[in-house]
Image 1 (cartoon, helix red, strand yellow):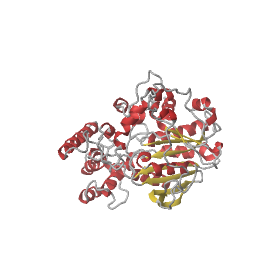
Image 2 (cartoon, one colour):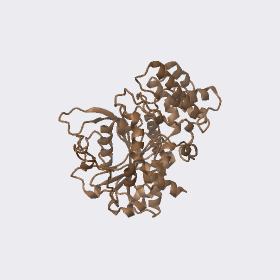
Image 3 (cartoon, one colour):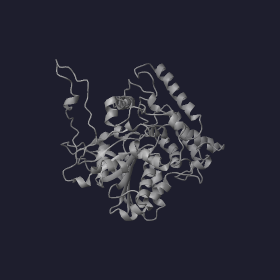
Image 4 (cartoon, one colour):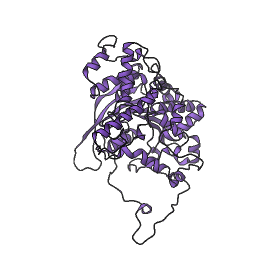
Length: 478
């Protein structure tokens, strides 16, 4: 990143945010902690890298709270019945406690230590999480798990669902909680009848095709000797060495604390360091209850913290809509930690693991209000969602003309903009996130037009962990 700012000096001093999702729950805080350390040591210059906050979406931030909340979440969403849930709740000590520590019956890697409660905990939490026929990334999505069109007969569906569960079982048999992560995206149903037109069913294939086009690789400066971009890598995943949030006894709490306690956050920044943790409420892989339990516990152990806004609804309105109709977009609770850090905890209603995919309008509003430090997440984003015409080079050739077979790529694809530069990256597991260490084409930057009342000096750069940040972290650690 220091080399990036040297190369593109026009971005020096702009507000800088570290953002990611899914396993970004590990990458984002750990990288942010590294940056604050380098800023404290003078290796980084705050006038160049103006770090102002971090964003974690559907993040894997606590194995402990994930396991302890999964049973309640799955029961509340009808994934098993009351008798099963009541049986598991009998393992809570003391009885009838709200926050039941089921991890006390597990080995650090998440497997049962052999007792009846241990076996029941493993079976009804991480095993059921990955071994059901549901898509763990969106329990209401219908296109994952079938290898034939959804227009096929019920017998075909059952057959392919059985294969889906069997494939998950082979991965789970490796042992341990993290071994259960599976490339759900390799099994697409192109005849999906889901309400989003099947986009979630083919978006991974579409991204793979797009990012491996020669002109896209050229625009992202990917050398020819670098292999094609792939969404998942079993080789990377099987050799990944987990350092953070590695077992049920540890999570990202110490890393969050390092960030807050840093001299940079406490004494250098002129305004509070901002953190947002948001979750789609239909995600089973990195659920909203894991995030809520983690945040509430983290705040409780910081005596200087207090609640700024109790949990309440936030609303979404389509930009430019003439009527005043608003829809509930989710819930928000806001905290302040000693005056130097703000922490916003949000849910996004009806979204799964990929919030910008499932709820693009509310996601845009959420990101805009966070970056512009608007405490009211119900404030509409000042953008139009009207379709814009294709640029001339992408329009269909006129009848009788020969289409061009070449595309001119500028030497540099970085453009100066008065608006936030936002990127989306991340993945549900280290397998997918780690792939980007050698395939930087996994992320693309989309410039947006800034509201006229913002000056260029207040412009924000938001870099996804799927790109340079991830690689930098590992290089520095090594």
